[in-house]
Length: 93
Image (cartoon, rainbow, N blue to C red; front, side, top):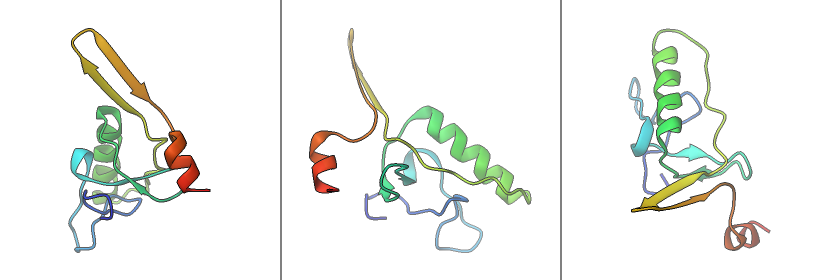
C-alpha cells in the first residue's frame, strides 16, 4: 500500500483471492480522512484478526478504521498521540 504496509479492504482482504492481512503488517483507514494509514497498535491488531476470522467463516464484520493512535515508551517516559498532528491537518486542508 501507499504507507509501505499491506493494503487491505474493510474485510482485511488483500488484492489476492483468499489472502488476508492483519495486525502490524496491514494498513488501516483513518476515520478522519478516509485514507490509508499505518499505525500499528495491539488493540487494532486484535480487532483486525477477529474481523478476518469472521469474514473467512462467512461473517459480515468490517473494519471501520482508526483515529491514528500511537504509543511509545522509553524507560519511564510514555508518549502517546491520537488523531492528526498539525502538519498532517494542514496537509489535508
